[in-house]
Amino acid sequence: MKFTKMHGIGNDYVYVNCFEETVSCPEEVSRRISDRHFGIGSDGLILIKPSEVADCRMQMFNADGSEGAMCGNAIRCVGKYVYEHGIVKKTSISVETKSGLRFLELDVKGSEVVSVTVDMGEPELTSKLPEPITVDGVDYEFVGISMGNPHAVYFMEEIDGLDLEKIGPAFEHHARFPERTNTEFIQLVDRSHIRMRVWERGSGETWACGTGASASVTASILMGYTDREVEVFLRGGKLVIRWDEESNHIFMTGPAVEVFHGEIEI
Image 1 (cartoon, helix red, strand yellow):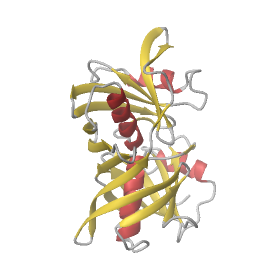
Image 2: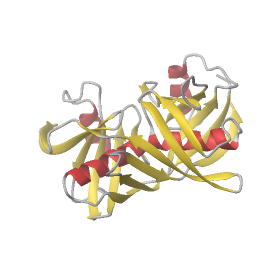
Image 3: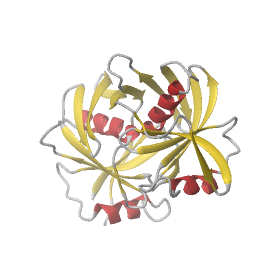
């Protein structure tokens, strides 16, 4: 299987061009290639496929083999890949995802895509504002936001000392979230900056999450903590999230990086 390793501020996936390749049993392939000791090492697998309703289709699988609905960092890399590999030679691109169509604007310098802005669609509030929850015997308050996939956003004073390996799975598998949830732990800096750590369902702690950053800014705005454009600092870098008043859509801007190409026997 030919593949390309790419990342969006450290949220890394293995990308396969399914205009040319066929991947059987992608759930198992994702588990195998994601292993950082016996595989390539990634947060999951991204298949770039033809689409009847968009310029291309993105199908994503988490490191545990479960299929995800949407990934903001991955879709930026899909935009970079299809442009630079000549599959879609234009700077305004539509991508079909399991969560619906997403629209991308590519920032191209020479022949290289250096950043991508994604119309993430309209956020949906899925909880009270905020909603109390007890996790492992500890009381919390979270804001539930859907960005095509579920997110629980929790605000706290300081995120560096957080034992995410313990609290992340407890949130993910809580009975309140029958489909499991992604969980964002947010430290407010000021009205235009926040810090974030994320536990993604099916992958664990990742260095970045685009839908999570979008959900976190949505929650921050709804709670009155920030303005409508926020820089989000994650372990892998920075995303700019803007909630547009006119369209009510979230727009995410960030880099996309190609690391290397290769082949693996599966």
